[in-house]
Amino acid sequence: MRGNVWIARGFLIFSQLTALIIVVMVGQKPQENQVITSMPAIPADIASSVVAVEKVTQTIPSPQINKFELVANYQPRYEISWAHPNNYGQRYAQDVNGVPVNNQSIIVIHETVNSATSAINNFQTPHNNENAQVSYHTLIKLDGTVIYIVPPKFRAFGAGNSVFRGAKGIETVKTHTQFPPSVNNFAYHVAFETPLDGRNNSKSHSGYTQVQYNSLAWLIAQSSVPENRITTHKAVDRSGSRIDPRSFDRQKFFDILKFYRQ
Image 1 (cartoon, rainbow, N blue to C red):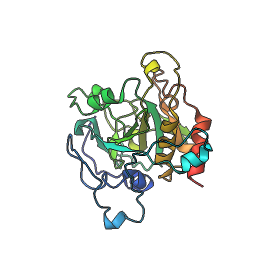
Image 2: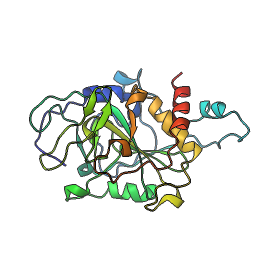
Image 3: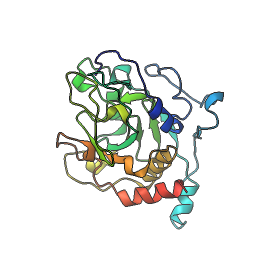
């Protein structure tokens, strides 16, 4: 999904999502299959705005604990699994017709429908067929582990034919002459790993784990994206074929998010 080479913008989106970069995602384009075993130092120029993630190994507190106390003491584990470079691209300052674009960031919530491992394998596989190129910025496993896949400064290919309907009306950007316009140029895509009973075409499943909700809320709370610009793949899709995230408890998620943002 390349299109012509334009001047990459991304500044507004990058600034709104800068804390989601989590240090390792700042700067140069990641190399394919890069392995990182520890978090590198925080660059001095962004040290004041980045929230570093710590690898947490302790178990979740007893179910008897107050849910907000549990959330307050929660920090997600993380992994880094870079997508192959042809599965994501630049964010553009102009659409295919040369019209300047300056959309405020949105966050789009998805689910994998298959396992996290299967999704990552797909993202790390080079696809010459542009119709097969796909990625999220971040994926949250069933155990709450956050997997970073594409840095926020780049455009993940998460919603191919899509629009966002908000206070400013319909928003979408056409970045490829051969494909429909989409929200990808101003979207941050994050997905839940689907539970075992949902790895099919059914309209619902048993739902996501508590730690997945905790990790999602924790992650999004690091950004300045407002609640009215947090949406789902189903809501932005124009093909009529996307229904994810299925069995998503919107109220639970926003309750936890509000707590983190207090």
